[in-house]
Amino acid sequence: MKFINVFFLAASASAIAIDRGHVSTARSTGLEEAASLLSRHHAGRPANGQSNRNGNGNASKAKQGGNSNTGTVAAGNTLVLKEVNGVPGNECLTFRNNGEIVDAACVNTAADRQITPTTLNGNSVLRVQRSFTAGFRPDLVDVTACVGFNGTHFRAEDCAASNIELVQFDGTALRAPSGACAQGHDGAAQMVVDTTGANCATFQSTSVTPTAP
Image 1 (cartoon, rainbow, N blue to C red):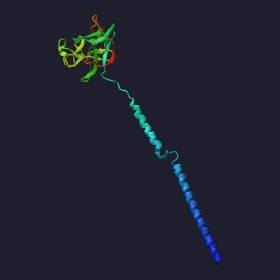
Image 2: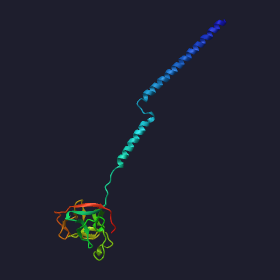
Image 3: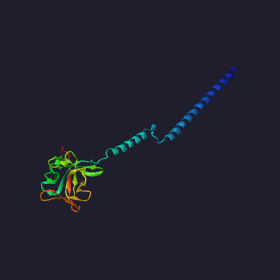
Image 4: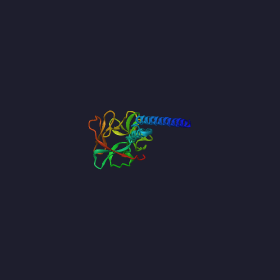
């Protein structure tokens, strides 16, 4: 009888061991299958999305960098104008005490050689850098002077004066809105104007540091 009980106890223990082994095997198999599914699901994806974040960051930086070197064109530079084929050794436009324009030596630091392209009421004008005195041009004392056309001559005029056309520099020529242009100079090195605008002198510009009037 004892032998039979021992036999049944041994058989029960074996059955329990087999059942636990089966459960362990099944659990292990299930985990392996789950791991395999996860591996296939994430195949080709960057871990934690790190690569995508870096990629987007680099693209953003590249876009910002592409815009960082955008150049700009300077406006309102003070200029000295040199007449091409002007009076040898005296080719630069100069404002006399009376406001008339003549060819004289190119002294870039002299205020009476300097003009500054700017705008007035939306129109392009040339502001004269030098100042004037009451003994020669009382109308230009304590006002802003521009290059103006009075119907016959280009000279310094009050920017706010009536019946005066304000002259512009188009990069090569000096022109009034009506079409008149600086033609060159006469025997006394004084500026000559072609009122038809057919024969215009060419000028080269040099950017300079403005000199106090």
